[in-house]
Image 1 (cartoon, rainbow, N blue to C red):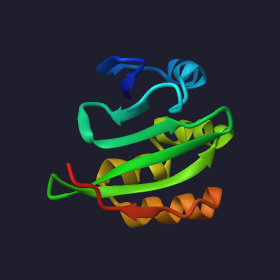
Image 2 (cartoon, one colour):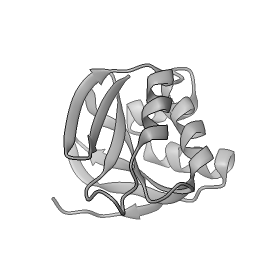
Image 3 (cartoon, rainbow, N blue to C red):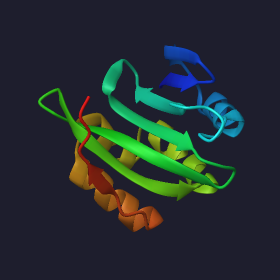
Image 4 (cartoon, helix red, strand yellow):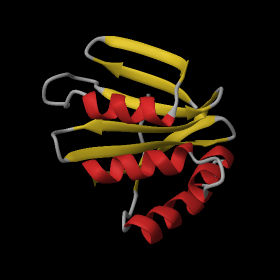
Length: 132
């Protein structure tokens, strides 16, 4: 996995990262009220279109954001608020190359991602169209 982080005015891209390192960075992540445009994301190897991102709002509340692409064109994102503990569970699933979640993100199977999150965690994603 690779790390993409923009926080506290620092941007790192495509740095290899282990699950343990990811957990440590998530734990240290500043909350959004302190830093604008503050997110941490993880990509599958060198595929910058297979990514999960998190924004921390406070000690207990985060937003998960999974950018969605169609024919390599950004079309929006699957998004919802999740608990602090759930961020770690989702990250663990993302790093597990055998998990359905990991495989669905890698293949950009957004219906599978939505169903997985609903079934496993009770998280119902909203699809948010974003213009950049």
